[in-house]
Image (tube, rainbow, N blue to C red; front, side, top):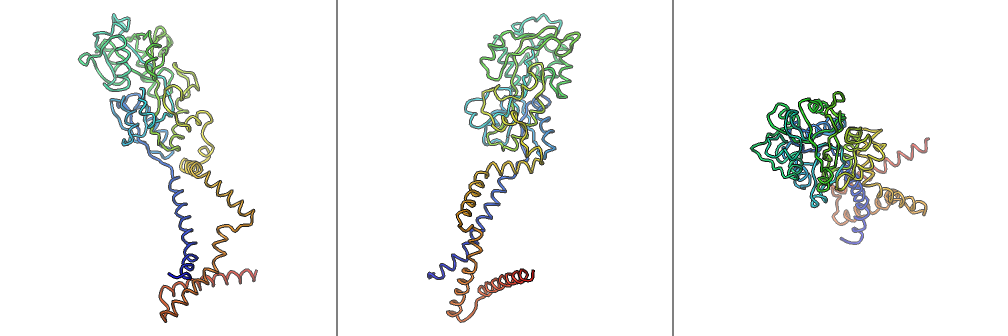
Length: 419
């Protein structure tokens, strides 16, 4: 390729190439700013507390066009491991357990939403008066491997009380209360909502715990137990928590409680973090017997990294874009500005500086170079015609495009002159 042809090629195709690159960049920016509208949650036992909370969250996300898939596994202690696994399809879930330090790089918390007491119960006619008397008694628990089972196992083991499968019955909170009140098992241990929780599930379990056939057993060393497990906190179930008069329980009950925290993969998109944080703030900011109003959700109850966006939501509320636009529009703008805001600002500053300095802008360069590019194209066609003695179809198309472009320019000039 000689020098003239090389310059012809450069001036002819460089603007097109630049336009193509800019177009692809715009398409890429738009595609990467599209919001994600699906999430997979892992919950514990079907009908258990985590399952109820997960379905409640799913119902709140649905009006925003966010689809939630819920996967149940009775051994809910493993939920945090599935979330931390990069190969797992699980995005997030509620946990009531500690996470290993190796998981810290893979997961973050959106916040603790509930302080759920550990309830130790027995029948009112039972001779059991102290937690140490749980030894060698039949017991009802959540399924083996669940977070509630693990907490009870830890509490009882701390008092040298082993859990034997031959003396145990398993089920959710409602089933455990039923087993103890009916006399199927001597005692029960489970984690469930504190009184005052504003969710339909809480009404039924509160009513079950108000059963006059139940008696509550204290965990007197709750502070010592908490010092060995980050997710546990000393709590008191107040007298009258489930029924004021006659009071159920009859007296204040010292116990420990689990910090129920929503955690997710570190890669969870900011738009989902935003919506989930806002929903959790609306659902769990009320007072219960375990916390004051406005105390939850909180990000300082468990030792896990925090999504900064969740902390912002709890401190400042929902961003204005999400208040004024639909989820799809708001999240698109949010992601686009967050990802490309700096680049757009720098581009704007560069173009402004170029304009002030009197330098030609990119559009002006492309338009201003058109006559020269057309001249080079005609010269190139002329040389090829002289060499071959004929006009190729390719060159015919180029000339037709050239003629069409000049006709439009002439028509535009005539309209301007008439006006």
